Figure (cartoon, rainbow, N blue to C red):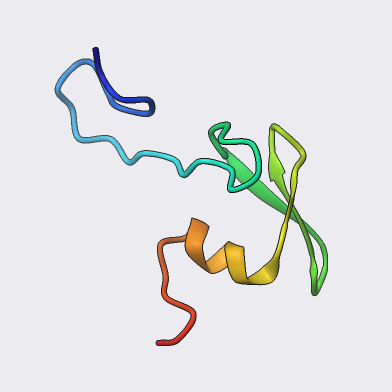
Length: 61
């Protein structure tokens, strides 16, 4: 069995991160203000710090 978000055809597609709150695949993050973000399609709120983690970046760079 393949892990979630893995392509099954052997191609090298980019994978999407999982929501830090519920674990659902995050397709995009909506921003409603400087400190108000939500994962989509689940709608869970995400903190500004978690935004860096979703993007695969270290906040201390």
